[in-house]
Length: 311
Image (cartoon, rainbow, N blue to C red; front, side):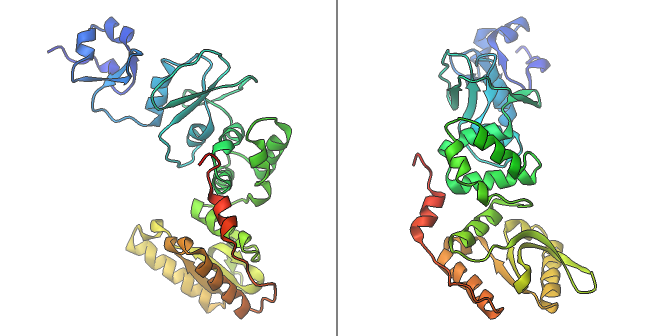
């Protein structure tokens, strides 16, 4: 049996490329190879791992030459950890290509893509605005917070983009501009912050360094209300990576409490019971002298925040 040419491994290739290396159509249709885009002449060696960039390079062998990654797929290339089964591309070319797991968006205005690892992709601003028409308000804020934290954009820059463009997603983007914050380190931190905002509770500062009166650094709190000395700590699965990390977290919390800070630990399941979580935070605020209006829990507001517009 003829060996597979090494230059074909680890990448997608066309029928023509394979033929030039002596790989016949009959060989391609055997068990050692697999069609990535059936009927379009794009192949790969079978049973090799394929990440997003591999699949995007396979798409490029079929799509128009000006195609650029866009929407949620573009956000993935800009560094966001998003799970999606569809790959989104945009093009100025009128010709349509129907491909499995690929959505090709026809755009009229010039795309102006950037290059990431040899793949053309639209800017983070454009990807988020374009994706906004299919995202919940919560996800728009989640992704914007993450892009800001990753230095892919600023809140001011995104606001300017949203207010100076005429694209389908700008209205949903503009509706969330006041909710964007810097230094957010996880989607769950965003979720917790948005829940408190919907309830009308005071706004906590995000990932704030806390010091004692002597200037000793006590730690960085996920959500901090300095005037009431309250810290909300989101204890997600990543805090369970090792026993040493766990001990460090406990010691930090004990140090904060010893200096008079009230630490509220929030776990993932708490966000599934928002009324109870809001009540816990409210009771903590009252215990620290807060005299503002009581929280409001409006289920429809939470549903609207998380509702997919096309769902």
